[in-house]
Amino acid sequence: MNELQFLTWVRGPGLDLAVGLFLLGMAWRLFEIYSLGRKQDLAAPRHAAGASGLHTVFRRSMPPPGMLKRSPVSYLGGYIFHIGLVVVVFGFAPHILLIRNLTGLSWPGLPSQFVDLAAVVTMAAMVVVLVDRINKPVKRFLSTFEDWFTWMVTFLPVLTGWMAVQHLLLPYTTMLALHILSVEVLLVVLPFTKLLHVFTLFGSRWFNGKANAHKGVPV
Amino acid sequence: MSASLEKVTQTLKEVIDAPIASYFESCVHCGLCAEACLFYTETGDPKYTPIHKVEPLRRVYEQEYTLLGRLKKMVGLSRPITDEELDQWQELVYDSCTLCGRCSLICPVGNDITYMIRKFREGMAVSGHVPDGIRGATQRTVEIGGPMGLKWPAVANVLKKAEESTGLTIPVDQAGADYLVLLSSMEIVNYPEYIEALAKIFHKAGISFTLASDAFEATNAGIQIGASDIARVIVSRIVDAAERLKVKYVLSPECGHAYTAIRWEGPNLIGRPYQFEVVHVLEFLDGLRQKGALKMKDKFAEPLILHDPCQIVRRGGVLQAPEALIREVAENYIPVADQQKWNWCCGGGGGASAIHTDEAEALRAKAFGVKKRQIEAAGVKTMVTFCANCRIVMEEAIDHYEMDTKLLGLTELLAEHLED
Image (cartoon, rainbow over all chains, first blue to last red; front, side):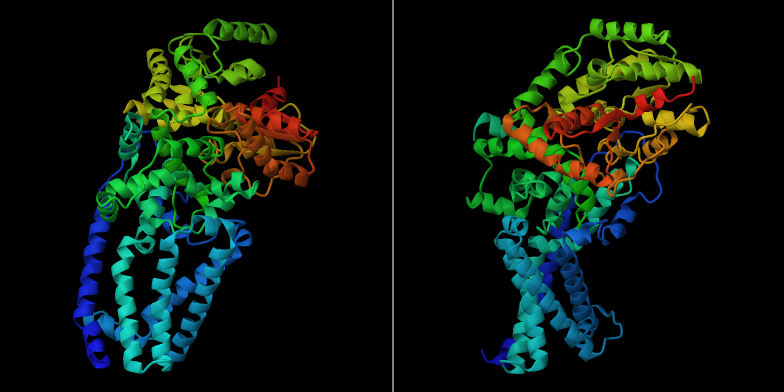
């Protein structure tokens, strides 16, 4: 297989396979989790302003009082790389084109220099949170193979994409093919690792917010 | 697999629901929950990270409920939970977790870790992986009536003394009263002034109340230990008495776990809503305050801070009443930085204060460090709280550090300054 054949494969059957596995995996996992159900709370509810599942879904995106100071790297690093990923994934014109081809949905792209900068900042922030994971006793203690693996699986698409655009190291075609392949790996892996939090965190925040709202506590 | 392990797995399988599954799937191992937990902040030991405390539960979830986990189990790649492991986890689930709920407020993906620990305790309880202190307290509550082994004649004696010192009658088993008053054993034994204070307030407000000779104890060790069947027996006693006496309200004492048990867990334990309302004593008092029926003759002059008990405030939803009441009675109330739902635990809730091993006591003393700093930062000699358990735990710690801090109960403080 030469580089063109490789690119053709990752763009064609490879992409179909990855998207298919991603969708099947997602459907299965979400069913597996949310079909477990939960018991109704029979205690008489107490009502309080700002207490509901939906409030918590939004409120938890902000650091609780005092926490930014306690763990600045987690919060700042976390914000930067999450926002950076959104900018790079959904703001880069060629990505929007791909999404339009797949779904028909489209929106205006961001200037490519800006996306470039976002990619570099995202990678820098990801390296910082990785170092933090190695350095901080609690994070290191909690870390398993999955934590290092998912970091790598998330980092590689950004790195290869940026390198392809910058024409670094390998010929553009090869780097682009590697980039698409790394995204396909990410798609397949996402439903079965902690990367699933991208979806389940809304459910978690909602459950927590709702259970505590029942007692009249905005959490 | 041993018979007891099979029981644990079965119980844990039963307690795992959609929220717990969603919480486990959402955890990204960021470790921020550690920063919310006083057992971590005061010791710096990563093993006290809240989400780590439910690791065996996570493995059961993965092995029993997820596709990959089941595949791994089939080919022998997964590590089943063991008795030794649960033994080791006892310290993490009981000694170093007070179910204070602070981690559940901090988790960025929204996990209610306290809920998970509470559920995990159910599995620990069925397999006997429970500290002796909590087991003993639970047994006494079931067999005798209260965690301290207090029987009705002793309570009647305390009531008689309260009647003598106040000159008021304290009705017992009186059908048709508005309020059924519950007590916690700790109040009966250590702070009988609470009963006197309540009698005075009820009489002054002209509201009828009664005690029940077969349901005076409000605390529920079954909930602390995580044994639903025992918790149900204990709570049913109160529900039966309240419905027999046809009271409109059941008045929960200051005690934090008692309030959670009767207000929030009770209906779920008996499987139906109550025919009466449960009111926390501070909500009751704040209601009187708002109606102008709680007048003070004078105010407490010395500067003081308030300790918000977790189960009443953060986990119980009595958010506004305590501060409104303290402002009513204190001249120099100093709010602390982390107050109301952000408060730090006394270190001995959730049954932890019933564990009397040297290690558990040393850990509790260490965990008190955060309260100690609050007291020192405010530069006060008085701290007011409204949970008999918090009070005892903090009094022990204050003795331990030889601090010059006085602890007061909010209801008593109000009673002392109430207009005659």
